[in-house]
Image (tube, rainbow, N blue to C red; front, side, top):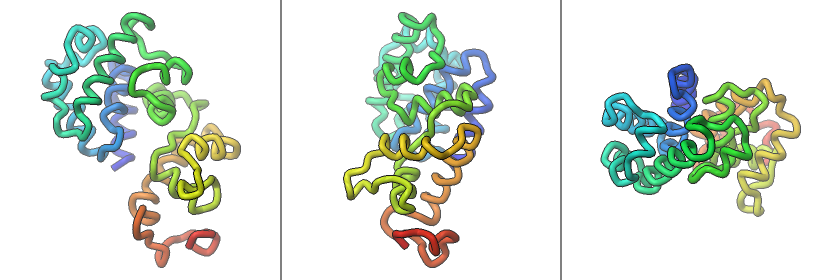
Length: 205
């Protein structure tokens, strides 16, 4: 579940090189089930003999990373992003994951969602922005908190609108609740409006 994935990030962030471990796990999670992403992460770490570090990954090629993460969709693209991030971190950031949104989104494969995920959960920055995935974006649109995709709204628009009123200290829990809600009740094609606890105040019910 998404909570298991977040718990994993919180656990590995305290390890040596935890920032990079969290970044790799986050990159693997893009458009992928959290359970699959976690298995691929562990497969990669085990495949590298437990040395999933900036130095080790930057010394390899993207093609050498691919066999360990084949269970993930878009694994070739993800291997390329992970390798490129390691190279950039070594060259520009002393081998460490930068703790700023502006620096993170300059890394290959890292958009606002991944940057905020790494900052908030991976690095424990409570002031980080909201992590808005497809579920958060969809639910926010249906509840009238943001503009729906059908009306031209984008995930970045939802993030900015939600951050105007969701307190920084509650952003991680807020994201977890909306993601779980979007996966189980307010699903993409057939939302379960008949059992939805907020249907009375939902303009889309």
